[in-house]
Length: 110
Image (cartoon, rainbow, N blue to C red):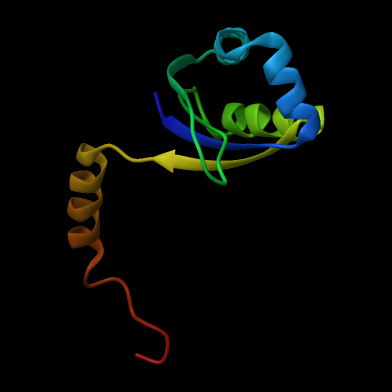
């Protein structure tokens, strides 16, 4: 199942809600949301800096990841950046696939 890194940025409303629910309460809510999408929460961390929380989830597909990210934004609590995580084995498969198409690709103007 694909993995996604969500980098969450809270606004005032989001920070107030987080302090009210508590850190573990928010983690439980995110876990429940991931499970509702057919996925699994792998990691949840708060952080200093421009990103307030880092969340790694396994989700069935990009549609589920988009639903998760859109739900955060539509809640009005802040924003989210989504990063698709790639397993080392996927890089190996990519290299193999690229070698099969090496003679088929022609660069622009080439």
